[in-house]
Length: 604
Image (cartoon, rainbow, N blue to C red; front, top):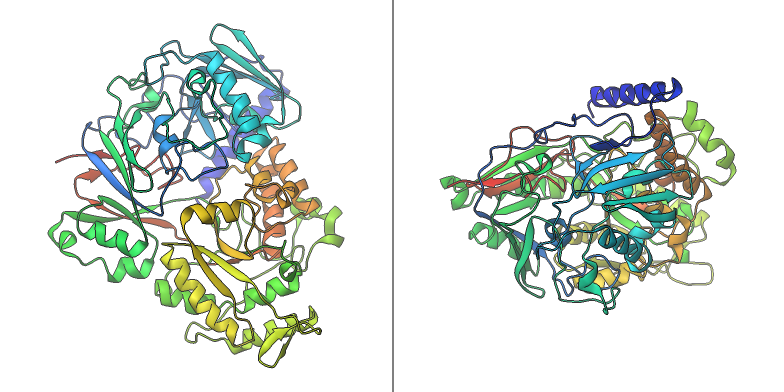
């Protein structure tokens, strides 16, 4: 992570605080809002800095997805909606720049206004904003959308909505939200909720799955679909917002299509045959050794590596502590010791990919691996007695032997920890003193070939210490159903994080997720220290406090040993048709939602 980016954010935050202390002018409408400091772009900006403002319109892009879909409502817990549905057809009041840690600019709203403490926020709708059917986007649509999503929508919308004390129309095109809790991020989150057309849903059960496409105000409309097989979006020639500075250079493709396949192997075959025009490759080894097909040699397909400067996030095998065998941190540490990352990385990635060492590694938000010091130590001090070893004094993942599938040194340490937790090998199987076997199930989604390879190698290592996991592969709908209801012991888990973590962290790690379905708290953690760090980071008044709070949270999560982490990549590997292009300027977040296909274009 480039330090100058964060120096810029810190300087801006310091300036903003200085202005407040000096008695700066009161709240007034603005063209944008940043979590800390001021937006990087001025009110008269002509386009986002990472687009080609002169990109031509036309052409199409075809993506591939593993699995299927059975619903066209992406805003509820039930059903499995296709990726891209909300992204392409529905808009929010504000749009996010992916070249800044967390800054929003006016989209459906022409202005945003808030007070110094961000106890309220007010948006003014653009008079020209229209749904795809030509009807105006009204304050009534906005208010209905927020209340419906907050009370009947997916749990991801409920945390922020629970902190809204009052929502009111303050003018013909303006709406104000007043908050019940100190939370500086709420002013931004209220600008990021999808705005749906109220009239479309009258007399219907919003929480039920449906195959009726949502009527949105976005640049695309659903042109056609086959449930579970494909969905196509067509650029709306009458899109109301095509001339906005925020949209200049975006939404260039006439058609965006997603085709669904059974597994990754079939997807790769479809790509080499020309049925797919852009493919993200997650395997570094495959990228190096298998991209030698005819279309690549002829130049019809090109390979691109798109860098990013965002946190690593967490990817790996999550242990569900709702299952009592994973409730003991010593057992979870033993499971991590039995996982020979170095050998697996060599097998899958030729050893090229760095390991995820903490949830926010590869960024200033990531924890130090030595002892906690300074503000981080202060934040953790009240909880020291209840935190597992490594949280305060530092925690490092074990290192395995890249040359051997079975690392016996680490396995001996694992067995020692198992014994301390009450498990010993008896007649070739790991059991309790009463003879109960160490029995658990690993649930994987069909088509997840890479995860399957990882699990196959891991399962063989576990057998050498008397553990034989059951591996169950289910389709995408079943996988979503089971993980939404935490009906698994171990599963493949992946979470991406921004440079400005906030209220979403409650959904990921909050104690309510132990029993509330549909959260991202798959591990079932209920840790008061984690809840406290999340409260502190969402209430932080400057970026330094956010960094310290996140580093403290990172220690709690990493030393909690909930996930057996694998690798991350500092680049996105994208193979694509030579007719598809993207700008030379790569945004801070790299290949992130808002980059492909939004800023790509097609040329013959």
